[in-house]
Every structure is written in C-alpha cells, then in structure tokens.
Length: 194
Image 1 (cartoon, rainbow, N blue to C red):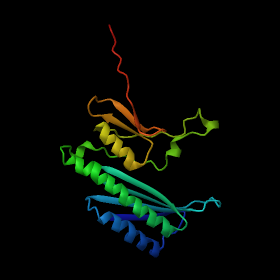
Image 2 (tube, rainbow, N blue to C red):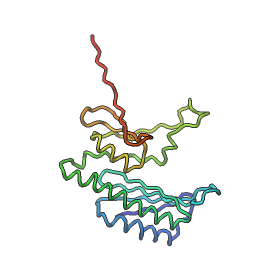
Image 3 (cartoon, rainbow, N blue to C red):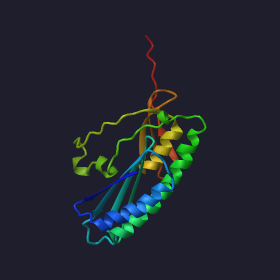
Image 4 (cartoon, helix red, strand yellow):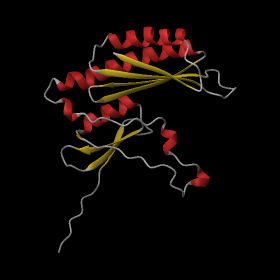
C-alpha cells in the first residue's frame, strides 16, 4: 500500500511520517482492500483562537471509490490518531456498503471514480461576489444507481453528489437534507408536441 505524506506550509518530520505510517497504515491494513492509494496532508490552521489547530486530511482511493477524512487535534499526533480512527470507521462503511453489496451482482465498473474537491467552501461565493463566476469545476459522470450515489456521498463526506442515473441516463443530484435524510434532484423531461 502506498501512503504519500505531505505538509501544507509545515515540515513533515521523520517522526510524523513514522507516526502516520504506523497509525494510518495499521487502520488500512485491517481491511486489505487492493489496490489502494492513500494521500495524507498535514497542516496547521492559523487561527489563534482555535484550540485544535492541527489538521490531518486523509484521502484513500480504493476500487474506484474515494474515502476522505479530515480531523482536527490539539497537536499533529492527536489529529493523526483521530483520523486513523475515522478512516477505520469509513472503511468499515465502505466495505459493508460497497464491497459486500458488489458480491450481490454489481460490478466494479458501476462505481464512478470521483474527482477530489478539497473543500466545499471553495464552491460557495462570498455575498459581495455573488454575481461573479470564481470557479469552474468539471466532473466525470458515470452511470450508477441512486444507492451507489448515496454511498459515494457518505464516503466523500460531501453534502451533495452529482451522478448519471443508470436507469434513466439523466444527470441527478443526491444531497443531505438539513432535517435529516437524503433528497434527490431529477430533471423533468419535457416532450415537444410538433
């Protein structure tokens, strides 16, 4: 398994790298999902009023799916430990929802590879710039079922997920509702009478 450790505006010491290999590596070895690549980003938040400035972001790619975890801690070692625990929970969810369900008939090609979005806040516009297009995101959509799209939403930790509905061939969006549960946005197909 390949674990790439990098630092954003911080130096990754040999001790930090060894701690990541030990904690994150052990969490990943338990599930033995091959092939898997893992990117770990270590960074500090500059807000002095934040009691947990250390942030560890783990992005694992396994069998066409992306599992993303971000945890905050008082120091980098604590954040690594928290992220290892969360990676274990997310991989358990991945294994039960995706891998075990595939044995029931779905193929590996049914789950779409997902492009990584660093932060959903990047997609939001400030109030004063609400009429300016500040970012364009291009995504690859692959046919999948609504259930598979919900699993991808959970694994990525995003509020929404855009996908091509395998049944209808149309673009759909699943999203987390504020009062709980999920919603789905589907286009209305209009027929033209000539």
